[in-house]
Amino acid sequence: MSFPPSAAMAAALTEARAAGARGEVPVGAVIVAPDGSIVASGGNRTRELNDPTAHAEIVALRAACATAGSERLPGHDLVVTLEPCAMCAGAISLARIARVYYATADPKSGGVDHGARVFSHATCHHAPAVFGGIGETAATALLTEFFAARR
Amino acid sequence: MSFPPSAAMAAALTEARAAGARGEVPVGAVIVAPDGSIVASGGNRTRELNDPTAHAEIVALRAACATAGSERLPGHDLVVTLEPCAMCAGAISLARIARVYYATADPKSGGVDHGARVFSHATCHHAPAVFGGIGETAATALLTEFFAARR
Image (cartoon, rainbow over all chains, first blue to last red; front, side, top):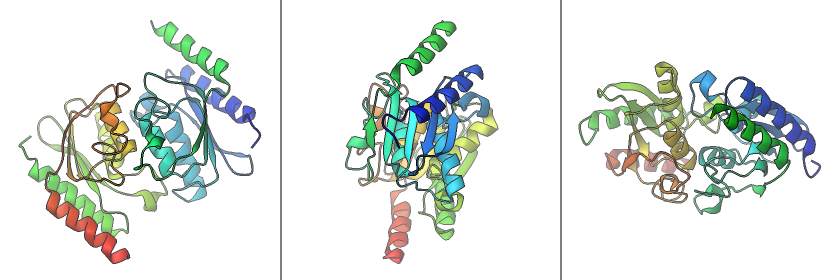
């Protein structure tokens, strides 16, 4: 995959906008195969599905695993518009994702570079490489607009 | 719910045995409503479903939320045969589970009292009360037998 993964982040941002239009917190994610193709994408669906686990990353990971017929996705990358929370970081590790690219850092709820820092412990048996701040401006603007509109 | 929640843990153990019989790591979980009734139960299904997120806790949480028509389960307890991992701990927090009762501690992969200790950070916006070692002997024996048979 090219670096920075701008096409994949653009696709994740499209998913985030669609989530926002559905009344969800606007976060989107895509899974990129080793050949650079996007094999799954997803946006937040927690409200629609009444499912606290339906964060964009989990939606995309489950779809990619179902397509691959495997609970692991070695060599695959996850590109997401917001720093993953602890739940999503745990799922990313379990799926053996190779690299995580996220746009906006999340000091309040993030679990990768903040808080639980899930990948940094000995109990985390697979830690992906992490690249933050990729395509940050557009993703941050989307979140800021969303929360401003709700206040 | 009575303390210790022996009927709920027995039900979780039944789920764990069923998971083991399906070739999954034998872990089971149940969700208990404020009135003491078991509203959902689940066992590990990661292999069967090719879904790295299909840990017993997530299976049970998703089922309980779907039934409740809500992404949050305030006042509900989660009873599980093994200390939850970081992913499951994150999901438990997002679902606003009131109390977590687990049987066997998991120093290698646990994310509650080991490793990421997900509930202990400021980024964790809801931390349940946690009670470990509940009904430990039977759950630990089940896991020990399972892994011994695979070596």
